[in-house]
Image 1 (cartoon, rainbow, N blue to C red):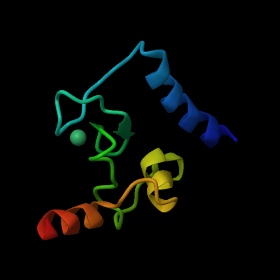
Image 2: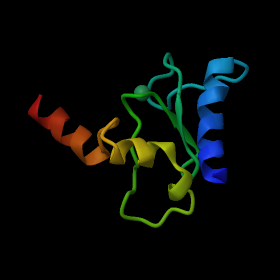
Image 3: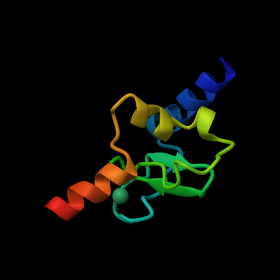
Length: 86
Ligand SMILES: [Zn+2]
């Protein structure tokens, strides 16, 4: 329950517009997703777990990890693949 509330709060922060940071790769885009482990913000296009094979204490509460599992976001490995083929 607590973890779900934490995730929802991240989404709410964005909607309230009282705090905004930018994507680490796209300074003109809003960094909607935040990696607590790396301390980086990412836009929807960039959002993926940068080190999915390495233990992360935040993973159980990580919205990026959750959405990647649900198929809402593509993993970093898939992003690299699609870049090469394009
Ligand atoms: Zn980006």
